[in-house]
Image (cartoon, rainbow over all chains, first blue to last red; front, side, top):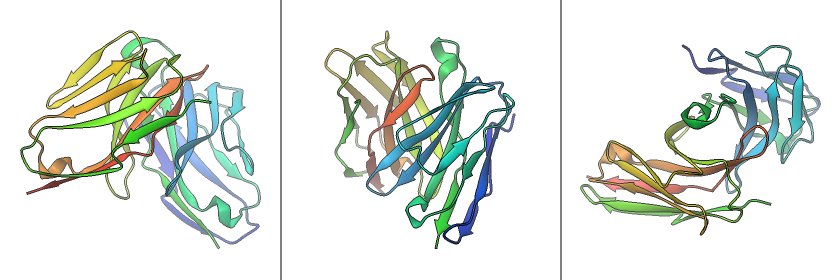
Length: 115
Length: 112
């Protein structure tokens, strides 16, 4: 298994540009989430999904869109990039089942800089 | 709103010492608690997962405890090694999708 994969690893955008951060998992996990990590702020939840076709907002959703058309993929879209969105973005996934199977696994991250 | 606090923010110890990292949370209605390790510029690696009904979990030199009623967890690292140097993050899970709320982490340096 490749686990949770994210592309690209690095990206530089200009203010106002749009882009999509890709996230995929091959563990058949129902739950997927996006977090951003900023110095002094820790990791904060942006959006999450409990299954294909179902998404919801987290703590910091403004400026981001998500969709979940398949179990495997959960892309994060920046509609009009702003310098405040400069951050490291992590995707995570886990099983819905209770017990040890709901350990959360994280991707390697995407480092985004918005100029 | 759930808040997670980790103390200390940074810790430096000589190799071989046993150490304890602390995590506290404000809402005891958690689903589980997970400890992660993060190396500089890297992603998060899961170390231990404790279900809300459990008191502790062990993996090798690591032992994590959970006291849900007092809102506390500790991560005990035995016989620390320079390779243990990293940032350790505590996260509690609650909500329909087990959303995680993270602490700010403890940056550990183990000196050779």
